[in-house]
Image 1 (tube, one colour):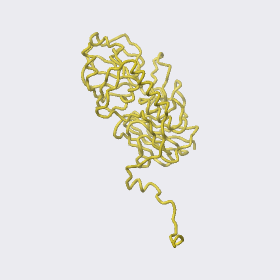
Image 2: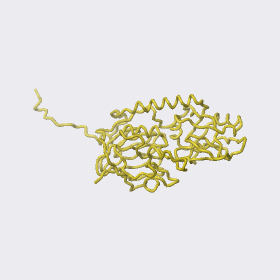
Image 3: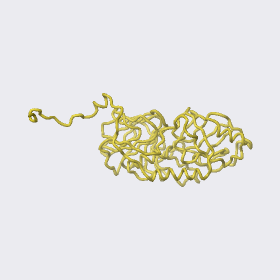
Image 4: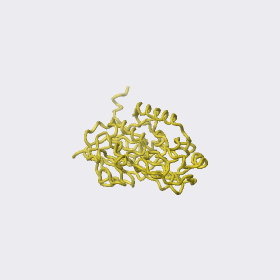
Length: 346
């Protein structure tokens, strides 16, 4: 039997993603790709996968996985999710071996909105416009462009050796979620900030916003104050980038995310800088967020710092368990042999 990862159950929004469908925006094709670029990069590094390789993106709905054919190595990282292998709790960022017959469950935990699972292998599915990224709205990607569901199998080739024991992934840039009172996310003004009064701009940076339940991979709507337009809420449609903050007619900001549309006709008051977008992506509905005005130089420096972190790679270390209970003890062999005391007596 060929090796595969089998989806036993999946909540809404669990998809296969890779580095994204690049170079096609001019044709109206959205790149898609991971919501949390840093967590996605971490699992690829831990799994020794190629840049841009495919991984499972897990939403708050969670997922349950099994291995078929062979033991498969998996790397997991993202928000502070609840990771369990046959019921035994593992760190939220870890690498493990999934044997046939074992069950791996990933559920929403203490914080964060997205989690990534990368196999120590290559996902062997046909590319769609050169990519395995799933964009559900346009039905582009594997499985007809839909989300993953129970019964799906991800065939694998070029398997690499799985870890001999569960390992913890250490990556300094992983963002499980914004802690209360965390620093504001940095944003560059414009390019249509002239469509807003100075009072509206000040309100954008001084308001404590909350992520609306009306958020998805396309955009995070923010609840809070209504921002008034000084020159109307329509512009000639132009290209939009990930992190653009559009202000539609109702005045509620929309921060465009991985599944953003290629163009938009609402004025953009700001752009969240690339280095801070993962922190925004990991926020759950109802969680607060603030913004601070950044300069171009600050955005470039932050991007360089993040690139340097990525270049340093990740560390894989043996797990240090501090939450051992009876169920954990029962799952491991604590005896490595039996001796006859009479043979060693004086």
